[in-house]
Length: 165
Image (cartoon, rainbow, N blue to C red; front, side, top):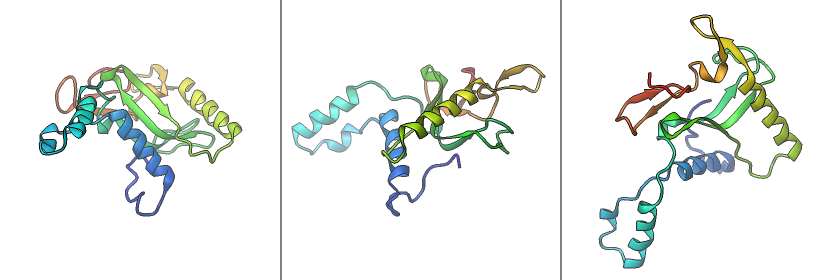
């Protein structure tokens, strides 16, 4: 849980591969044009369009897969009734403090997806006490964090409330 889907392609696991493809699509990695110096002009032109396109969201460390979102319990010991997000993005440096992403390969009914969305909403509304005894939304308590590689330099760590920590 909360890790990359290693070996997903070797087993033909379509859902983990779709989750990984979603991360790549959101990251929008920029190709190295120097490696295409000997390629035909139409290949370089198409690749240049990707280089000139908008930046992606977050860094690879901004993404976590198969994350338990506890309706009860704690981050380490979630209780029953919570959701498990296919993908969670925390990139406050890109103005995305928290985003749950559900990747569906058409194997779930509309009712099942609606149930998951309700569980996401329940988690989003859940409040817990922080270390100072102040009641705060659980998603703002450490547990969902990322490490940024932009814009404030390598290794800047951000908490899910949007502040560098």
